Length: 418
Ligand SMILES: NC(=O)c1ccc[n+]([C@@H]2O[C@H](COP(=O)([O-])OP(=O)(O)OC[C@H]3O[C@@H](n4cnc5c(N)ncnc54)[C@H](O)[C@@H]3O)[C@@H](O)[C@H]2O)c1
Image (cartoon, rainbow, N blue to C red; front, side, top):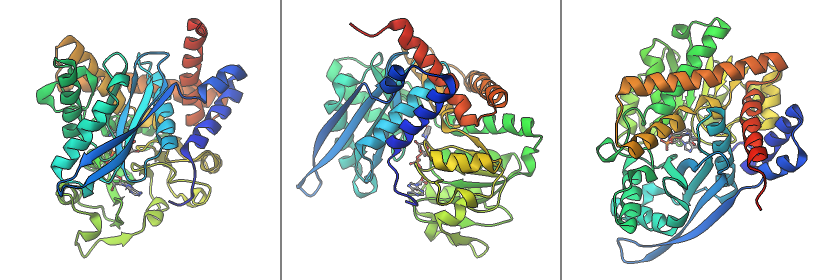
């Protein structure tokens, strides 16, 4: 968008940075830059008008060295293999940072779901699931929702997988509807985790959460949830955006009204309020605020705009929103960047809870979900913060020190087969 960057190159640069920091064995460094496997599938779909359209889909396992693959499913007209490889690798670091017994995986289908009818979307999801059936499963790789996918899509994936196996297997995906083995708190988990981490960082920086001005890029599952939570805690959310536009009001936007609008499938650019100003996504990212929360897609803060970022904190709701060049600039400017693998890890954490609830056929109450989520994410935050202070490195490099060291140790203990 702002700067054309391959996210898989970003991944490799990030690995080099942490490898240097911890003196990682060059062989292991090279190993971590590779994915375990990638499956590319063609998905032929009979459209409602009788024509045949063929979509391309991917499922990538970056690492299963610490447990089954885990990662979302993205539907987007722009998704491509290197992007999915990058997203799968970030999942490996995320599950490792939280010390969950899982690896990293990701999937995608190159499609704009808004252009499909509900029936076409269902056929696409079911055929895609059938095509990747041999590389997913509760002890192989467990998909979950991501950009443009949701609980209904997970329900179709779970049903297709179960029908092929001849029995109900809810643990094959997470982020399902609660009625068929989903977990309470999963839908809001990523936003809730962001909130816990921001609260903890504000305590360290002596900032009063209630008085913060917030800017959020992306107003989907993650963007809306964190906007809603912060709004309810007295913060002013002064700008949000979707793919169509940014929308700004310095006295604070009415989050509930905006959510009621976008939940009908409408774009923010068509929302009418005389007090609100439409701004571009670039203007939104460089708006003056206390906390900037990118919660849309990769490569939004790059060397092109990093110098103009005017917030005290960048809290990464999205995966990979900041490039390594931009990281250096933000670090020099003294901006606290809470990295994606920590900030947005609430989603995978509660996905893990959903998975173990499915396996045990025993379901928890929301209080227990949020309590355990807070404990795990805050432990990871405290460890990351401590290492960043001790080594005088960014929070991202500190989080990578923990995550990559754990993977390297697992590789050393398991050895290289054969
Ligand atoms: N859903 C989860 O549990 C979860 C967990 C961890 C990380 N994430 C990450 O958070 C981000 C958002 O995911 P989501 O689940 O909220 O998706 P979503 O589809 O619910 O929402 C995405 C939002 O981003 C906007 N958007 C899309 N493309 C854009 C662009 N080019 N420019 C500006 N805005 C754009 C969309 O209009 C929408 O408002 C992704 O990076 C995803 O990988 C999601």
